[in-house]
Amino acid sequence: MGGLTTDPEEARRSPIRPDGQQETYVVLSDEERAQGFVRPVRRSYVHEVCGTVTTMGIAIAETYARDPSFYGATFCVACRGHFPVGPQGQFTWSGTTEKVGS
Image (cartoon, rainbow, N blue to C red; front, side, top):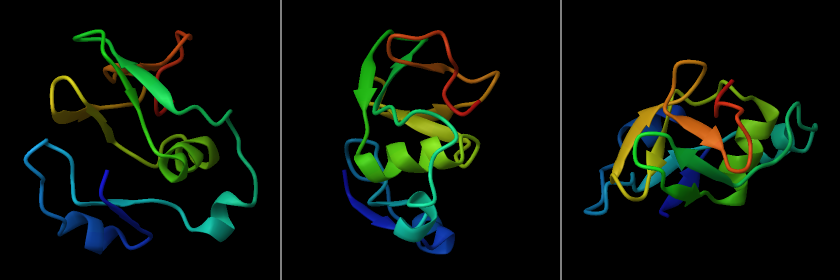
């Protein structure tokens, strides 16, 4: 994975790498994540379309755990693209039936 930023504009300007990932992803600040989590910190999720498990870095996982609806999409390593999360999204947390981003 590329770099991380707390600046959404920087992430929006981030180019897409040949593997389909962004160069830079936005995350909540260390201070915001240190305030605690409303969901468990989970690092892996399953893309329901292809069945592939993707594992993310800890700062992104903690951002999801602090604010489950922070992201509107996440990456699939097999499909090499970003796809929707949330109640109607395409991903569940590994080992659960819980939707990513819900």
